[in-house]
Image (tube, rainbow, N blue to C red; front, side, top):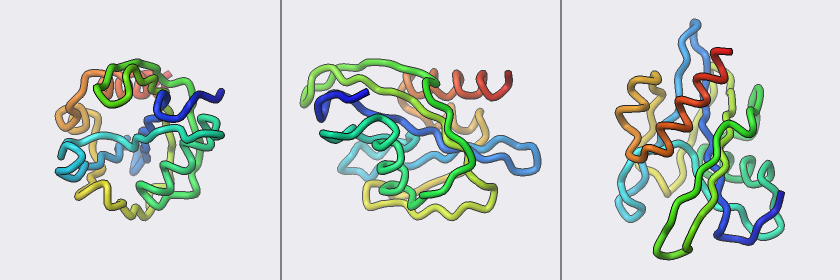
Length: 141
């Protein structure tokens, strides 16, 4: 699925299981980008499909290139922006190894591995919270 640049985004909820505990990677955007906590997110560039965008954004924002599995079609939502109009956001889940190293990009100032409760408390937007709940529901099935 390809769309024009700046009309489509991907959200990647990175998670790991440590001693049966499910943990999610939360990133704090730098102040110029709002200063709030979120999963990995980014735009789909011209000529990319969604999976290519997921892999690129994951590597750019976390340094992660290897993962255990990908869950696609986790959640979908649209939102309006002043800069770009209506954006479509496709949410993916990425499971990584428990001992994964994460190197955040200049876009972020901090990172945390959080439980579902901690993640929901940190997330600013309802759409991100709903996506996380949907992923947890899929993982519970």
